[in-house]
Image 1 (cartoon, rainbow, N blue to C red):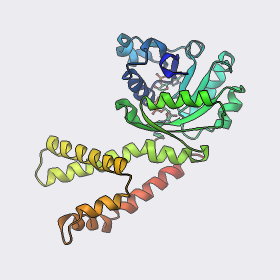
Image 2: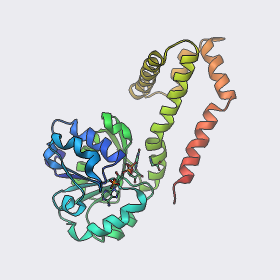
Image 3: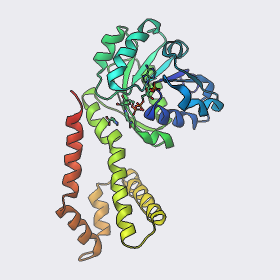
Length: 267
Ligand SMILES: NC(=O)C1=CN([C@@H]2O[C@H](COP(=O)(O)OP(=O)(O)OC[C@H]3O[C@@H](n4cnc5c(N)ncnc54)[C@H](OP(=O)(O)O)[C@@H]3O)[C@@H](O)[C@H]2O)C=CC1
Ligand SMILES: O=C(O)[C@@H]1CCC=N1
């Protein structure tokens, strides 16, 4: 089964839904005519009409005309809206993927009360540029549905399968993680301006340095400290700066922030 000829609906096409849509549209093998997106106020999506996608506020129609349903609604609305959709869902045709933080497979299953394959996925907004790492969880044994969902999220980056128990942790590290990294980058850019660069040049240096650091770890599969050791000349400026950051709680602030985000998710 290939994602490229499946009919896909993104129900609740807001920030994350739009990032996924942009990722899907960038895949030339996916026909935009096979994609339907929904939200109540469709005016903010009108600029996408020329791509060939269907835009509607009718969730039921979108579900009826699609096979893979990516549900990108807020956690506090998803169950109510799925309840309104349940009589148009077909367990022999539909595959459902929920992106909602903190809403379990069991809650979704008992809302729709059908045995169609249900997945939770946690992508991030880097889907916009085809670089989302998506964590996927399911209790379904339907291997072809698993393959299809994996293909879908691989078209907007990379994906891994995890146990559902780790979905909250995946939300924090992968989805909130984008914001942590961007705030870290903003701090580096501000530092760069203070030591002499204009904002544009500082941003160019920082963005490419962060990309290079990530690529080193992705390709070499090393522990970060292994690569850090190569940069820290004894008595040099790197170790002096790094130690000053640690004296001010750099790693500790990150770890505490990650744990605070995690505890904030209702369990
Ligand atoms: N932002 C992120 O980085 C991540 C978010 N998530 C999860 O993804 C989900 C979506 O988050 P996010 O994209 O940020 O939220 P948004 O609020 O940006 O998107 C939700 C969209 O749902 C639409 N909506 C609301 N009610 C309905 C309805 N009855 N029918 C159809 N559409 C409706 C809203 O548009 P309108 O008001 O016009 O209807 C809105 O655009 C959440 O559950 C979040 O936990 C997961 C990973 C990362
Ligand atoms: O901040 C939030 O609640 C959501 C979850 C992941 C990203 N945004």
